Length: 375
Image (cartoon, rainbow, N blue to C red):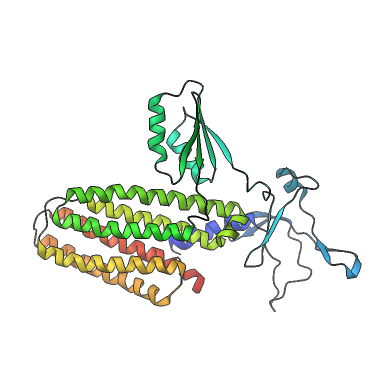
């Protein structure tokens, strides 16, 4: 089982723990009228989780039109619910019902507090990714100008995170982005566009030894990181709040696929930065002509893999799978050529070729995300 498939299985287990599973089906495909009671910890997908069975009840006699189930008392207490409190019930595409006690709270801003004396970079990053709308940075002592300047530099890593209030002992950060204005699909496509240009620009800078163009590629990686954090934030919020996932039209499986995909896109952007940071003197034209077709195939693989995230196309899947095999062969031959005919810095040239190979392998990882849905 591949790493991608193992990770998907693990996270789907976590998601299934959060939702109410449907009744088991009989061999004929119909729900059993009286399924066995499954109370206690039961093995599901190799893990033990707490499962409670409830009998469906009908009000108003045989002609009644309402059906009831009794919610577990421990769950009601844990969620701090009482008589008359509203809960949100949504139906997933697979027939499961989601019971969400946070329906009345999801429209309210979520606030968290962090002390400025703590590891502030980590504290802000973790709270931003957890979907908090407001982060209050507090300090017993007066906040210094250097601390304020450091905080301003830090929040540039995050989309729409701005300072909205401040005094001597507190700085308030608010995330002003609305997921509906920059949905995950749009942000992912934007991330792909930036990364694709980074690949082209890093190679062009490497070919001609342009250190200024290479530095621009390195700086552009910050925008990729900003989009990465935003997408992860939105995906986590979608999983936490069913109403948001419905609005974003994201199933748990699709959210998981996007979470893995955005990690792969960031990896490819980092590989483009690796190439840009190896810029030295211009390289020989004969080597450029051997690298260019490999780079073109990597770009084609990358493009088809990302497109396949939004619309499954078996032809694109087949192309990427076969292209990876060709890429492994071509890069192996090119490495041999570089070592046998050294010109310039052969060690650096081999590392650049290896970066292109790893980009292609990562594109293959992206296209693998669609395969389990179409077995």
